Image (cartoon, rainbow over all chains, first blue to last red; front, top):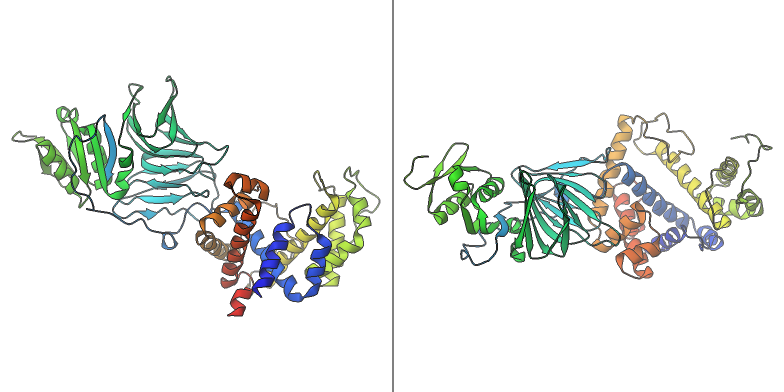
Length: 320
Length: 195
């Protein structure tokens, strides 16, 4: 019987072409009622896919139960040497403790679809095999059905497959990142947007700024309030390392490190303005909620004061 | 189902109606073989003629193939209407349940609760089918079905041969058919019957 199914599928696929032999098909149908029944089932199934696919969101994501779960690699890495990398690094650590896949409402009634994460990251699979891992406490709006225009608030790692003739655009604050198939990480919160490329290259565009191409092994930091873009080398292997439960930095402003610790660790982390201006190099591992902040304090020679809602970094011995 | 106005023939630059007359017998034989019911075949042939009379056709490169495709689609629409009306445990005889054939391009009507249940079943089964497809078959199916690319174009985009595309699509269709059979949205698939 499965031979009949395969023949039915062959006829069905051929039927959309002008060179289909309709007379031979008629003879095949007449040969057995099973032929007719199986062809009809194939054609109806395909029509159902087309009809329902046009009306609802079948392809983008995914009730989590049936999709692969990204498992945590918490604690898999220990501290690495500080200052081992040059330039200012960005590998945003922190464990996506257990990422789950994005859930999108079943009925795709509008062209735009927003996914928001809580304390867990989520992976969104696009129809073309590309994937986007949305960081915890982040939000992403897919402005069209196939994920070619995306607006991001928070963090996300993009693994975009190259499709001829296609360009994808990610809008992060005032910065537009264009891509034709590569891997890169974006962290967008407040006025500062960070981009790091691990494979291929992306284009960066913002108002009143010349377009910039960022190649693999390069990172960019865009300050929206100053309309200033800074680029520099990064460790390509560390890009998006938060997905594996760690954040690696080289000479990164402490305020941005704290921002990441809060996002990925799930606990707020504040400090005085004087401390915000300091820089940090090293790798933080995501463990329990306090761990990255504790490690950061220890490495920086600071004191961590725990609060009910979040932690505070203080100069040792000073009141804060 | 009576002819509307035999004399009011709109101009048809494609000559499809002339081709219809030329191939009428083959079309009828095809329809009878395709739907397995001579009476229904006659009705569908008439529906096809009405569609041509309304000038529904777009530009056509191969008129004969186009007529057979139209006929084939009419069978599908009719089957869909029938299956809706007859579906097991379908107490829903919605406003369009008896409509025949069901226009494919009409806007979503206000769905009855039962229709929503069926739609939900369809969505669940189709998602399950899509998610469990091998990567290549999934991508080929998307490009072919949702982006409406021809097989040659899918081959170009995926960087594989045309026969490679056919293999992917065959895998996808077989899988789809199996899952929809398991979900009782289609009759059981032959693979299940084999077991």
